[in-house]
Length: 98
Image 1 (cartoon, rainbow, N blue to C red):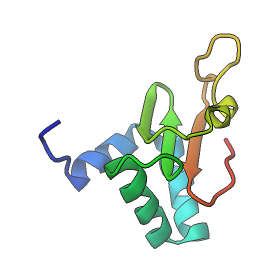
Image 2: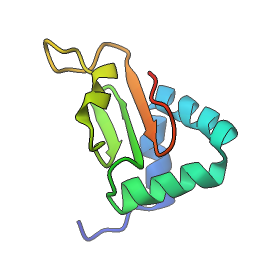
Image 3: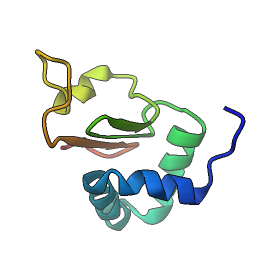
Image 4: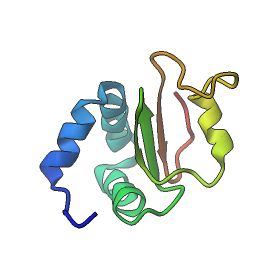
């Protein structure tokens, strides 16, 4: 992809993920905005696994975690689809929860 995505484009994408957006706001308070921003840079912009991965509905953003079992919190084991209403926020150095 040659086009550089603007900060406004990223914000628009997060608006489509309201539960993720709320959880990221919590994480900014808990872990610090600088930490979340660095995870974003490393996971989204640089594609490093285990830094930043979020999912809500059919939308995912960031680099997939190296341990895919972390997605078990989000995916139905039978259908391999997201549980209805489920969302997932994985940040470097944080405990995953849905």
